[in-house]
Image 1 (tube, rainbow, N blue to C red):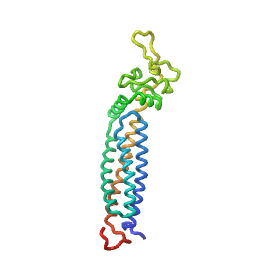
Image 2: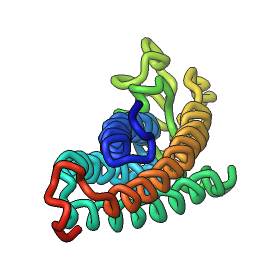
Image 3: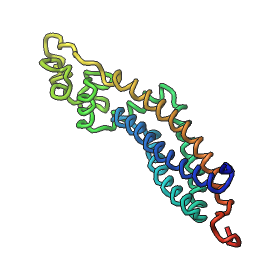
Length: 235
């Protein structure tokens, strides 16, 4: 029976772990990318940073696979150091995602909308079938305003409401304008943004601890001699 603390077992375990890392990286990138794409206009810098961590984990896992397969001391050393740094970074970002409170998430959403171009706002209105951010009666030149929703949002179909057409009545106009038939985009984006932070932070935190296992296993594997190599060879 193969000794589970032996060279062969350590090698296979490290190879398997890096294959898992590749799968984890793909999952992390997919989940974080969904959160970023769904929120669209929000400044989800933390989520974007976790996407970068996922890409970096994928690349370093390839290095780990090569180092483990060849028992390459230099590759394994750099793999071990970079993996530990990645753990610290990913752990910090995941905790930051989970620590952001509701008010801060709302401020991020407002900041993102205020700094988005009108064509981006129009895309959001079409994707989420909404109109305006918090106030449907703000014109496009307002930092929290919005372009007309007639050609982007289904809820505005056949509606003559000012929010849909962009024709806001002036103070001298008679008659009350038609009420906007659409929900605000904030009401549609808010649960998506909250979910993006929670899911991405939770996934990042969970998978970051597997990287500690990788560091420990690499240290052990580097200090073992290949039984097929020259017994007098320097490790």
